[in-house]
Amino acid sequence: MADPRSETLLRFLRNADVLERLPRAGFVMSQVQNPETLAAHSYGVALTAMVLADEVGPHVNKERVLRLALVHDLAESLIMDLPAPTAHFIGKEAIKRGESRAATEILAPLGQAYVDLWHEAEEKKTLEARIVGAADKIQMMTKVLEYERAHRGDLRRFWLNDYNFPDYGIPEAKALFEAIRDAHEKEART
Image 1 (cartoon, rainbow, N blue to C red):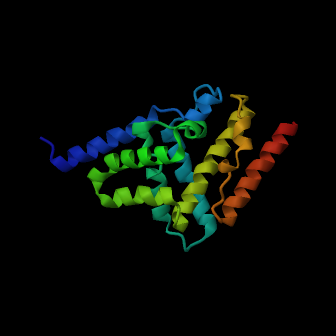
Image 2: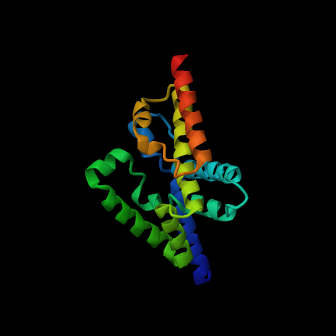
Image 3: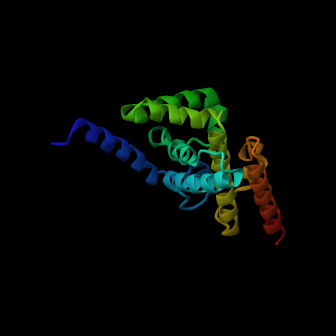
């Protein structure tokens, strides 16, 4: 018989595993066939955050960046990926409260440090959390570029929302967003 801690860890891993089956809702709304899953997005965010943290410099706690990136979307395993248009009808504060409750339910059994990590990612007050916040949108907009290149949906609305380009005061993130926009404009002309 498994010990209680192993059962707790297994419950957590099974919750996290749900992310492999959930598509990114914004891409579904944009008619992208077979869009990336939340798990694929989280991997992309972690990879983006890793290289962005390296660019920002040696003073960044890179382990913390990766831990923040890995937990940043865990709440969505319980409440799904709610796209920006949904917030218009439900309200951003209601969504934040729901995400917080879901994250606490998933992470609290592992310990308060995990819950605190998720809140740090959400609040974006630390440099590491701001790096992850920027990486979250950089990954998404890079995926938008790839879907556009493959003609996989109507993705125009992503370019019209400044909320999709937050650099959080990080010059390296700002430069990446500029490169993404430049690539979009160049590819739109061809």
